Length: 275
Image 1 (cartoon, rainbow, N blue to C red):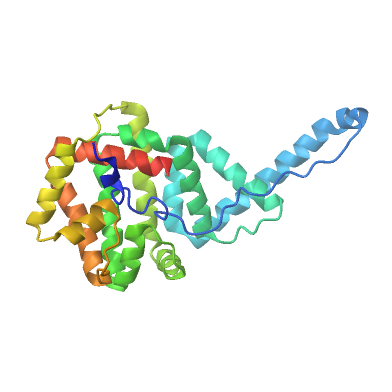
Image 2 (image 1 turned 30 degrees about the horizontal axis):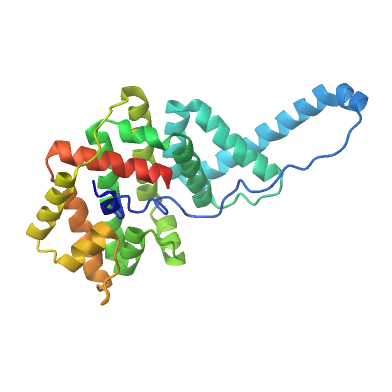
């Protein structure tokens, strides 16, 4: 099996929701305290710490709800479907806030929430039912179409996993679509956790079927190599055409026979989770 042909099938794995900086980088501050003093104040300190954490978390939740109602669709769904993960992620945000990290960028909050969820549970998405998997790529296609209407260069950045300032600005102006992408991944994780569908990996025949279908859509060898293998041609493909190729690629993949399509989708989602 030519697994390298999935280079761009896991498109946007690096920037699907990467809209800002990480918030989980600062270390804990430690102070020396005598055993006796620590024992006497442990309960009081823990209660005070819990209270501060609760207040900080409530402030963050309020900030998201106020600044980005679309993102609250994702966070509310996460709280409903995976409450332990929700608590862990929001407590992490609250701790970072208490340690002095700026928490005003709601796009970054969604970015980090999706990243944390993908790292902890992302491989389960590959075990989801076929239509649930397919929705991930349908929303990616919608993102590419929106980007193409704005600027084909941004569309190509998304395709190749590039994260430009212009892409960040676009994403902050299209939060409903970004939230749809996040929810599609979350739904696949919860569906995969419940159903645990095991699929065979895609075969060389599956990839050949995809390549033949792309040729039937009038893609040439250079364009197919660029979209399937991630190879940069000696003569760069203009952004408008490469953006069009990316959309044709996702549309063609969605039209493959069900068995081959879901095998390829499953492996692609697994690679996204491991990226």
